Length: 275
Image (cartoon, rainbow, N blue to C red; front, side, top):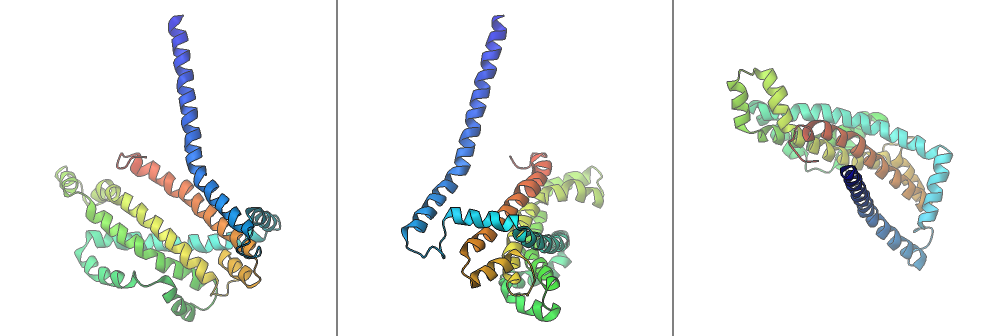
């Protein structure tokens, strides 16, 4: 009887400690937003900027809700997301393939590394006029430009990841009779995967930056970049900020529900990094 009571008390203590830890974690995540929101409201109500140029959070939220209810914001977001995912998929496929080839083949490294080293430092917007001239205005040039620009960090990180695989792992697998296919599947790819995921994250950030910018230039009929640029002409700062909020939410969703899931299922599960 006494043991049962002790067990119950220990369980309740653990539940309370876990509940307190969850509250502290939520508070740590929410606190920066509360601080930034408070500073924003102080500036908005101080009159330093005209209200039309620096709206309150309430006005931004009202614009966000209104644009969402009317379907305008979801339509823009879906069009942008389709372009983003299409271009990023191209970048991921070609970037990882080229990076792995560079890491495994000296000849491929000699061919691609100078080209990638020259092309990567050039700002993505510098390529935009060329792509618009070559492929015209519209979705094709936007998607190809996103794929081209976001492929550079993916290539670099995939190449670095393959190079970073410990030689002793490779030799041990070869000593146990692993052929090239098994060596790649069970040693090279798992060892390089943390770097590849980092490259994909950096590539996604590049994709966002260039896509929002090119939507302002490529005369696409819909898109968050088009929405932000169009709202600027009419000084609709609240609509601009609503579009920026959607970009942040999509980026957060991709990180939490795509990259983090892949990471937890692979490199964390394999014990290569801690969660």
